[in-house]
Amino acid sequence: MKTISVPNPVSLNLLPLNALRCFHLAGRMQSFTRAAQALNLTQSAVSQQIRQLESRLGYPLFVRANRQLQLTDPGRMLLDAVGQAFDLSLIHISEPTRLLSI
Image 1: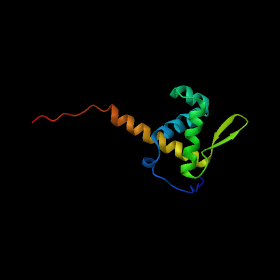
Image 2: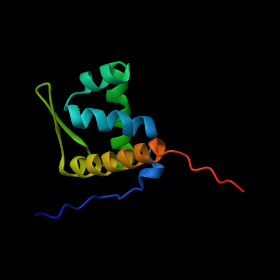
Image 3: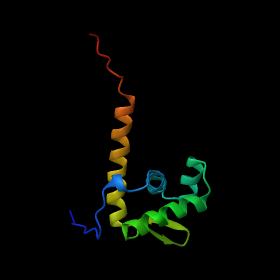
């Protein structure tokens, strides 16, 4: 297992949710176009969200080459963290509300 140094660790709470949603889908699908289709956005809007996220973090999340998209090492780490956070939020949303009777 190799250790990856992330230049500016940032809490997920401080990152825009829309940008994280775009990143999560683009990372899973390896495509800004398919992520845009899934989110009912334009490819340009997804690309802009990713660029803003990369700017805020201070490092690239994807390697863009010859119309192919590949996650960087920090991008893979963030994708795992965002995926876990989204999975946890879905669990909490889907749990039935417990009512107290007094």
